[in-house]
Length: 223
Image 1 (spheres, one colour):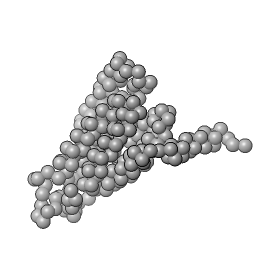
Image 2: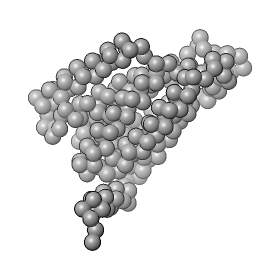
Image 3: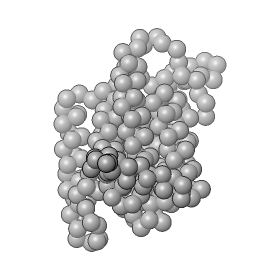
C-alpha cells in the first residue's frame, strides 16, 4: 500500500509531468531560456544578459496570459535592470586592450547595507500587499508581494554584482515554488525549483570568485 507521503509525491510528479507534456512552445522556450540565463549568470558570463532579456520578455507574456498582471508588469522592471546590469558589467572605464574587458569583481554589501536592503524589501512588501488587497482580488497578496520584492532586490544586487543577490533570489524561490504549484502552474513551479538549485550553486560559485586574486584572467566580452 502506498503511504500518504508517497501518494503526495506521486501526485506532485504527475502534476509536473502533465504540465511538461501539455506545455506550449512558449512555455518550453521559457524553461530553456530561464535555465540558460541562470546557468550563464552562475558562470558570470556576459551572455547572461541578452539571454535574460529574452527570458523576462517571454515570462511577461506568459504571466499576462495567466492574468498575473502584477508579475507581468514586474518583468518590465527586470528588463530594465538587466539592461543596466549589462552596461554596469562592461562599462568603458573597465576596458582593457585588445577588445577585452576586465571582469567586474564580485563584492558584498556592508552589514549596514544588508540591513537597509532588508528594511526596503519589508517596506515595499507591505505597500505592495496592501495595494493588492485594496485594488485587486489577489488570493495571497502578502506572499505575492514578498516574492516580487525579493526578486527586485536580487535583480538590483545582481546588476551590481553583489553576492547577496543569491540570498534574495533563494528566499523568493523557496516561497514561489509552492505558490505557483498551488496556482496549477506546475511548469513554472518546476522552473523555479531549478532556479533554487542553480541559485545555491551560484551563491557558492560567486563566493569562490570573490576570493579569487585580483589579477585573475579577465572575462572576454561576448556582446
